[in-house]
Length: 252
Image (tube, rainbow, N blue to C red; front, side, top):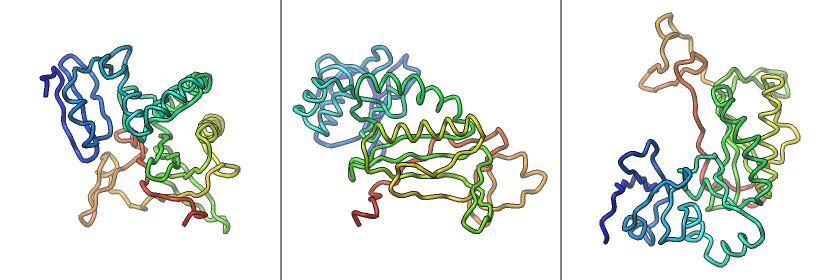
């Protein structure tokens, strides 16, 4: 194996790539059949993208070729598709963060969803994922702000996080995520009605009576369990991960 100026670390199914002078850490999905190839080459940052000319250019395209095949990557490129970083972090080249998207739609997503989701993250952390094991998408929402929902009995529920499952084309998933951001921007709440999702999981807040001292903390431990206290401006959810293997009810 050739020596590289990069350093590499493997944690679970993620391979991290670092280099002196970088202010970012590159991450990609670990797989035994290509990890040695990645580690034997020098990776630089070209316009913010992890890059190696010998391996064909951007790491995001390299990973898509490994997971989808060279023929499909070439075919989608000819049709005008680019590889979209779903969370707009060009150093996040995990397969769950990469998807084909028409160039014009990619530009539109960059102008609205990518910018607005970053601006609103301290209120609602909206993230997009693709689960390669199911070929489905998920939109996750971390509720840093006070998000409430009513059930059929008009009972109010305080929400920590929401996960939406999609078995439809990626552009439709992006449109739903944009709708959530638009509604929150206008009303400081959002509705799950008329969403294109095929299933949902809602995680409610755990009711805790905080002491005066605890109200100034970001983390509270009760009965051996650790709780993150949101809404204090000392802690917030940057993103909520997706549930791997979650399948639509119609496919169970």
